[in-house]
Length: 179
Image (cartoon, rainbow, N blue to C red):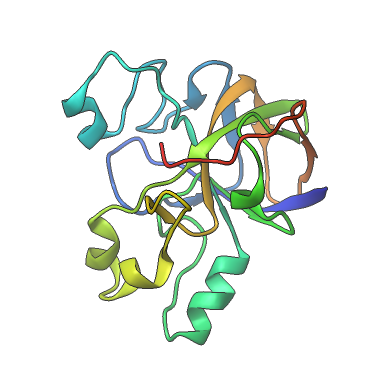
């Protein structure tokens, strides 16, 4: 299984959208350098209020570009970085990956930890978008379609056009859950 990077984004502030960059740097055990979600402990504001001592399983946010094509057919205009992802991918079915799948991008390695949960800011970006991007897993837990979260196992620079290879964990595979 392989794909490639379409775009990379980051924002030092807790903004919903992240500006597209020429490159980003992943820092082992922390996340994207100069991004608001960088840290060993949870950085997501809502989750931080619940328990600030929880490990950060949301260091890197990835969305597959195929979601944007699907949304365009429904009348939405969404592009890279606009729904808060750090890495926009193509040709990898991200939510179908199991927990622990590793995405190798150049020297960097991201371990997939779970599905992104939808947040209320999505409708603030475009009215009706939350419903258009939300699915439910077998446990009826809501997650954002085509979006996963991960941690940085090995750091490195990532640029648009970089190849992504997927290394699956040993069997049995565990399906991703919202994190």
